[in-house]
Length: 566
Image 1 (tube, rainbow, N blue to C red):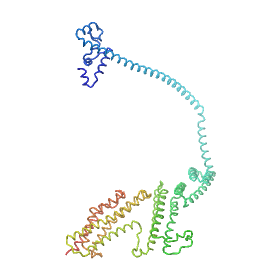
Image 2 (cartoon, helix red, strand yellow):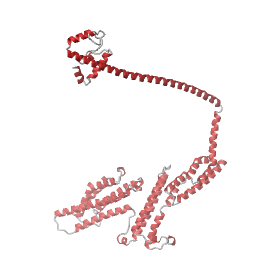
Image 3 (cartoon, rainbow, N blue to C red):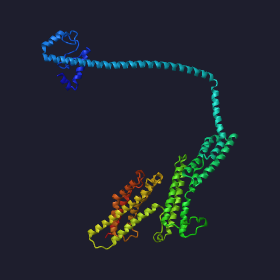
Image 4 (tube, rainbow, N blue to C red):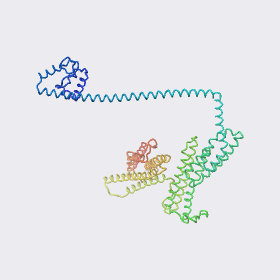
């Protein structure tokens, strides 16, 4: 039963039996619970019993125990008891040997550890004694040095200061020679670093004759260095890295920043505009001066086709313009400005420079296009900016749609009322889809200007104004305003649209309602999504545009009622 209970409790019965046997072997007192856990058929070996048949008791009598067994047990049981006792004896011997072996190893290990710790502590104690002796010697020696040098300490400090001063004076006296050597080796940055390091001291003591001569020599050398840097700054063969280094050094030498900006901008992309102007002269048939003739390149005297002219302007002038703006930004705008007003001045100079050159470029393009025969037959003026060109195309598309609708309404047709309604719905749907598709096409083409592979497209000073002001406000919002204005013009009493078909007023009124309900929100959402326009940077709101469209729709409807009145 005890074995079964042990199994039910999740414990190995043989393990319990071994522990009980070990406790009985060493004479430990066991609780009743331990006694109960001894399986049946096993002789109890718990110490402290007065039973002469208890094999673990000091009063154990083998003869009495044997007699009782012979009397109470059969031969088979006696043989089983003998076998059990033999097994228990062997098990106890084995367990005892295991315990003795394990304890022996632990004692051996503990003894080795204690011996090692004893040796280590003895060695550490010797080292601490040695360290204490050394510290005592150091303290004594330090006190001896302090007593010896106490009277000379102030004198030594003074001499150290004099030595440092002499080194600085030596640097100042050798400064002119060092500057000349750096200029000869073209180590301009090293020369500027030497001069800026000593500049304040030289200016402070310039009233003294010795320092005055050094200051004058250094200023003359620095003036020569400035001229050399300016000459390198004006050379067209200089790389952007060399230009940036020249600007940085000149600014460290306190050269006027606004003057450097003017010099940098003055030497940029003149040749590109000159070549465009030269092509216009060739196309117009003017005779070029002798100094403009390029006998070595006769093919350059042949006028370019208008497409070649535009392509040359894009690949030459516009590409170089982008490089100039990027270089200007790196050299002047990206620098940490001490004066915020100077930063505004530098930016304004760039804006004026770009606007002036772009006006010249568009003027040259206009002149070149005007020289074409097809232009004189179709156009009389050209817009000045790319935004104006796109706006004119969008407005032209709207005008064509309105003309087509008027022609369709004016065409005679023998149709019923149902066919007339379907016809108006078809014209309205065609107008809606055409305007939306045209706007989507324009937005898709403009995305080429913010492609990741274009360097200037990633610059905030281009991307933010282009996406927010030019695309969203200038094109999309401007075109929606234009639609509202065109619709309002049909409602003005003093206009020349007296022959406007009433059905056209209904179509435009319904179109304005569709603008208010869906189209405006869709176009602005599409623009903001494709061009990553920030919500806080958006200008005119959707609500305001919808209100304009709603007002135009109501005015058109009122005008239709007046036209169709009794």
